[in-house]
Image (cartoon, rainbow, N blue to C red):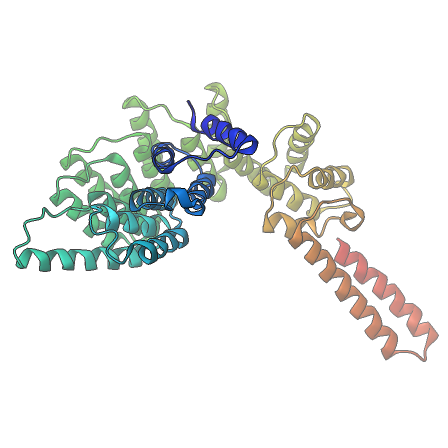
Length: 431
């Protein structure tokens, strides 16, 4: 049974009776969450199950086993705040030594910090733990030392996200020494750090590839995508085409990520003919466009002063009820604001999209939408930033009006001239 179906069944039974899951069933539920590829919503649900267990006196609250299962779930999603709260609660209830027998306690906490993009804190915790282990070994402790390979892997990935290649290499070297670190994902993360950092020349990317080969790591589609990305960032046109052909020759089919990588970089660098070739290739091979590829094409059309195509695409999407991504909508509104009188009907469609909640919350969208003509009289639902921007525009215009009226009370002709200036200013604000 799928996890979502299990949860729905439990909530239905729970609403109609006083039955609740016991400690063993809670532990099983938490293990199922841990095994599944689910979203952060399940952190709330896992916490709810354990809280219910704590509230039932007959269950004696959550045991250390259940608490540790909860911590593993929270660590999976990098919810450090809840992990710390669960650790403190367990220490208060079961004593400070409650985690002594749990072999993966430190590893789990390091994973939580690493996935929360706090690699420095994760490294400090891992270093302290290794220091305690070394001291135990000197005292003749015969307990086997746990290598923390999973924690090292997560720490290495966190360092790559932090773009700290040196520390990431240190973690990868330790993994290789322990007999791990031969998965393609870790090496792709390392390759990506060097690809996006312009301090590294292209030959360093090829050196990373050489180390991948010598370590017995196979390339996947992401490896080729990263090499094309690195080539385009450095303006190496022949190289990215070479890696594209290598990808096809190796049997990897170019996917949406491949074309998104190419289109974004080609459009950004103004290589429109190359970008159009990529678009034609996608159409010929029936590759579905993503929001990123569509927004890149729209941005390119705007740079080429082909706004008619942008508006045609936008009208089709609105009228057929298709999904409109934030990135696409941003390009459309920016094009409307370049010439608001020309695109009056498209302005109405953009406002209607906001009224119908078809556009997700976005600071960029709200900042642009606040300047659309007629936005002040629309029936847009609560969007805090948009409302704030509209209020600011109104208060600025009001302050300007009061200041002008107070400065020139004696001259009627001057007041008429100022009134005209004020109306022009308010219209400018609304645009």
